[in-house]
Amino acid sequence: MKFFLLKMKVYGIKCIDKEVVLNFYNKTLQEKLEISKSHVKAIYGTNGAGKTGIIYAVDIYRKLMLQQDYITLGNSFSNNLFLNLINQKTHKFEIEMTFALIDKKDTLKTVFTHKVVIEEDNGKFSLSEEKLIENSIKNVDLEKEIIFHVKKGEIELITNACPDKETVKNLTMNLLQKQSFVNILFHNFFKNKNFKIDDKFNFAIIATQVFSANLTVVLQDSDTNYIDFDAISSQYEWLGQIKDNIKDDATFYQLLTQKRITMNNTEKVYKNEFEEYKKDIEALCSFIKVFKNDLVNIEIKTEDNGDVYECDNIMVYEDGKRINKKYESTGIKKIIQLYSALCDIEHDKIVFIDEFDANIHDVLLVKLIQYIVEYASGQFVFTTHNLAPMDVLQKYKHSIDFLSVDSKLVPWVKNGNRKAAFQYSKGLIEYSPFNLEPFNFLGVFGE
Image (tube, rainbow, N blue to C red; front, side):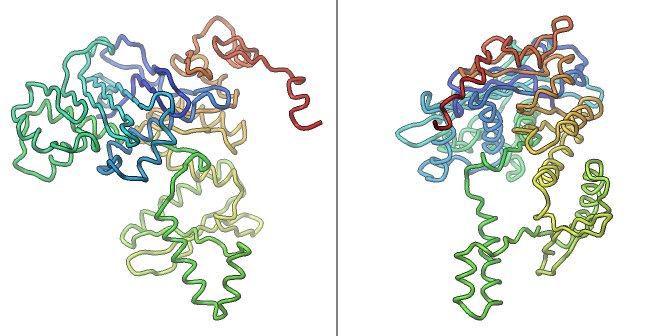
């Protein structure tokens, strides 16, 4: 069984102050979904249109579903995070995911729509609404049954398919404004053996939770405006080791103030997982060789540290060069960063990548997209400014969306021999005119 995202609605994230609807399939569904014709989507838009906001919306949804303490009332970290992401006009963030469950032969089994709303209340943020609906398998927009509906921390409705509503209410009491209803019940399925509900309700909850686990999100480093405590802890430990090796405190602090201490970028790998890690590095090496055919091997330099190995990856080239991965070019680093996400597409996951074209050569970018379109079985959504992918995607349905600065989204519709890239660059896409000429820059850089 795998998942396919049919429709996504986003509202109130970053600069998006109107509902944006992304369709990945026609609203009329067939028994056998032709997902190979609509499993890749590129989102275009000018700077500041809200493309990154869409990817952030998926990131929030995924973390809300997978982390039990993602929203904690009174938590300054959560409040600060949402304060910078949720639109300052709406003070409310909504995301609605409509997804299908299909078997290995792409036969449609069922469709669910899951909606969550995060809202500001007196300077704090809470989960104000959550709703799960089973849709008609004939038409994605038709409601078949409400599985549950939660509002303002109270259960408004639970399907009659749930025989033990009192147990559900007790499990979720006083939690529903800071934790997902689905998340709470999902974890109790495994913690409490006496917690029994009928198969239909059980299936809907588990399917929604597993769907969220099948989402992969890759944001640009410059956009991830939060503190990575694991990374800070690792660097703090590294600084301590350097200080211990330098007897003269003055020398250590001089290096520190001059920012001349190299960061520790080793990967911690548990010893019982090391063999699997070696296979992953071999596969990564094969992937990079497609772009850099002079790469011979990636050596793993290990240092024993209790239950784990501290691993450094050394890139070995034909001319004898040996370069630590952390000193590689920006382009190679980007390829390494994307590798695991691309593997997820290969393994039927739904992958969202912001600015997929950043630091990747145009030709290589197009070849990667062609591969995903023709061979990968998962679903891929990416934002980009590069027009080259349009020539690959324009012949497929639901493959290109244009987002305007006022949150209006226009899907590309094939029209004769018209080229999407030409239409877009000439300002002929509705709500996306490029009323810009070279003389518009006169005077903006000084005299």
